[in-house]
Image (cartoon, rainbow, N blue to C red; front, side, top):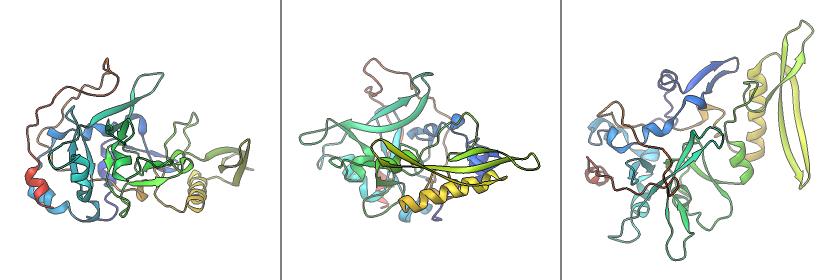
Length: 288
């Protein structure tokens, strides 16, 4: 597969992107990416997809007990599936919601810990061997069920600081401008000017604000902000820049859509009912 398997046209047609003065931006408000992570949607035996699902960006599904799945790199599959030889792990969906509207904002995979493990084990932290690590594990494309990668091979997961993790997020700004871009008054001809702004914490109670020059182009201000992030964190994988991200290629669908009940349960947002799978992935796993 191409190293940046981002299908721009497909994302645009699917409504995941919208055109702004700064180019194309993710429309996070209408991007329920979790609708793609339902196991019985797909034909897992499709030969064309199996042939394509190779190399660094290949993945296998780990099914959760509500019929959804999260994806891992093939090298991590057995470790994420089993405690021991014949002791399967039971993964549940952890759902984040907007506290004001109750709408789903993200989904992660988690399970109950055993023995010396934390009480709750998240799949992305286990995949990166970070259960005892104090830092964060960041999803580059912000999709909480895309757990591809390992400590040796960077795909979507990466160990990061809390600062980088917070910086790699899409925030809904009231003015509709991209992250890090602000209005900076009017030019001599009355045109709107824009500038980049980046804040650096220098001590517990002190923050230094770095501002760029002014431009009439939102894109110039946005690129300045991305350059600041690149210099500070020495990474070029940012959710603000769709061309820097990697997205998985899914098998063809057997059905157009399957509804999964995401309503809160009495026991919180952990799903516990059994789910009968319609397809087996044994043959798929055997191809690796």
